[in-house]
Image (cartoon, rainbow, N blue to C red):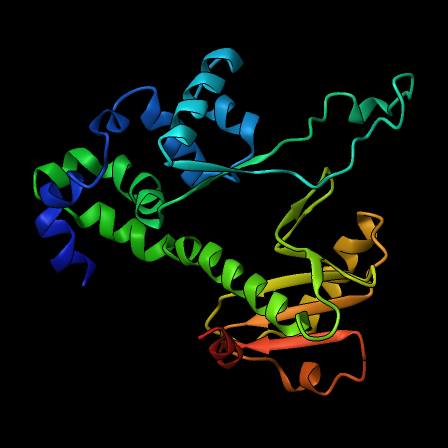
Length: 252
């Protein structure tokens, strides 16, 4: 499907990248860094090899063009007051917002296509297709995380509506979902879009990540495309929620 509908009609699809100067330096490098990395603001500028002043102007333009959006960090400042002395290993740490693509097609283009543009122009899609088949899971994983977040919002809307939700990151780790309910309970979620059942080990790892980040978690929520192991399904822990692909029908 990708070969027939994309590779063979590459030039037509390329016209969808608008404005066309996004295909050129330095916009191309910025957008590739967003698509192929974690999206952290200053990490993107570093990967694109831009100074902060120049990079900030380019990103400001890309946001104005509705190509990128800014997802604000929810991490608390490390310094509690101006004279607060940080540990040596934290002094260079920088709290960063994340950059996201507004249009999934643009994320696909700069994440998978741009690197192979010369070959595709010549009609050779072999290297592109090989890379796409190996890595396209990361293209759909973010969309799945967004759907899982919406499902969690719906799950709580009639009882204790969520005050906030979405991804969360700090100096220790990253979490697919961190939500706060109206009665101040903290929910931590992990989303797995894999062709295998999620086992109890994933719950154990999520708890370890929470402990490392110093979080007091009230509820753990696991989301799985392919369901859960019997051991996890039979868990007696009342503070664990399990959602599979069928649960997403609630969003229709």
